[in-house]
Length: 557
Image (cartoon, rainbow, N blue to C red; front, side, top):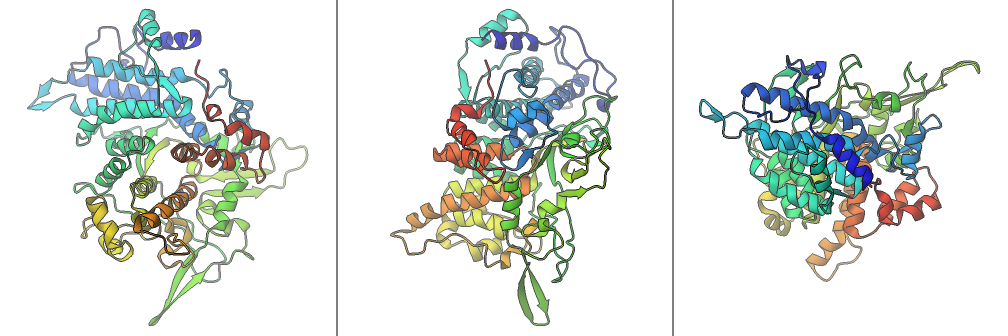
């Protein structure tokens, strides 16, 4: 308790000022707020909101590392820092550099100050000046609390700005809330703002500032997903993706084999950003991402990268079956890519891993200070942003919600076909279509056959034609339709979680995806088994450690 008290005292809004990051390019030094500073001027909006984003830059890398290093898709190398190695082995201590809850509460405290002091009634030309910023800041606060509670398991919910040590002491007496408690509060807190448009500040530091703001419906969908409110989660995801004013059609850029010779694939990758935290491009300007040097070889690290794709990720990728349809005249043949005899083993199966990951063995002499292993992960080749939401991941979480809401055929269609009226009519039976109703309703003029594709096709070819990628069915007829649905739900869920790994590897989601399903199923082994087997064989000590859910979280004392 003593340490947390010190943390909270350190969070008190600074009675003074600090300078903005150069990226913000704002002619003001007001980022953290002065005591008794009322936010009642239109000029305050840009300064204060971008100041909060500046605070979010501090936790941006950490959200990725905490969600990835503890999962099963990356392994630490000999060159990894001791903090990363301890994080990966769950030897979690209060002095680990990645265990700094104060940084999260710094974001939260500045959000609380804004919310408490912004004049929400201030109007100009009949419009509320702070409405957009107020919604954006509430969303920042909720997102930060989600990152905090997923990492720590239970945390104090602080909703007022802490200005003094006495206020910090009082805050400590509040009970800590679990992820359910945090999510339940913020679902209610954010729901009124789903239709409020976010600020538009134009280009800032080379970024389109509209991407700085977290989509409210997607965050609400995530919170409902964590708390078992699956129907609501599906509604939030659907209404964001199918929004009549800003629809998000699942038209993805896919990697592919150009022909049946299978020599060299066409590698294509699109981040499909929906929102991100902007980072600086150099240290002179402010906070830069360190993920590039951690994942990639570069001059500064003498080519010694600290994290690499795990054997588990390689095996999952290779286990997929790639196919394409070869059309000649009036005939069409489905061609399956071979698993053996390719120019590189990494070409086997799904093509996403070979699209954003390359490895080369260099000819360096024994006296060279540079590593002979050279790795690039192209998700981090541009270090100026940390993704908070991507379109393909949003569709996969929508599929997860649909499946748990009782609509496994629709969920599977997200993977294999893509949801549009034609595909729904062909691949979802009438019972599920009626039950799901508007949760799977899409504008036929926007969501067309030509523009829609399944997420699995991003790396595994024309999945709609893949006879090896099918909806799970029981070997024998079950007693009722409900029994068949109950049989399918956990199996489709496994397919969705695998797809999340293939599509979202290295992005900070994997550990929490495993955690969410493990908690849902009341099965610690769902997390413990893959994490302990990330290097190809089970680490029995790690497996035993992780079978106790108390060991899943960072210490907050």
